[in-house]
Length: 122
Image (cartoon, rainbow, N blue to C red; front, side, top):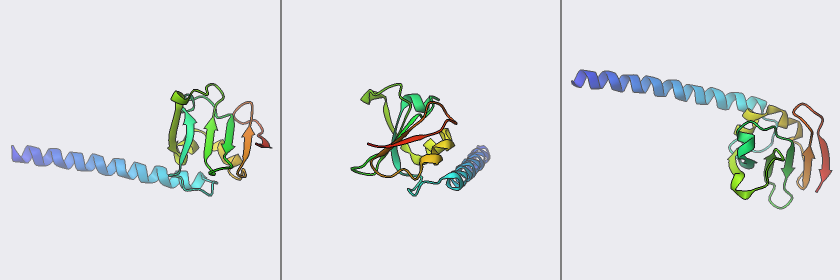
């Protein structure tokens, strides 16, 4: 019985090691593709629709607190809002790196992923 438990514990440790290696690799890859000056662990605003696959068509870099918003334009209901790490946004859509230099108080929008960004002061 003890031997079975020890083998089971070894299998769990091996699986955990694989998971931690995958997380470290993912973080490393995200850091390489991150053009934002902020930490990839920064909390940013988005929507459930973006997390479900809707394209990010509007990015806002808030004037008051420097916060970032990555939106799809399909909802503005507060209940649909989510806070995620910047790294999660970069994994969903790495093309938002194109507006990483957006100044505070500006927005950028586009009509489709891969389309040109239009930038405007808010």
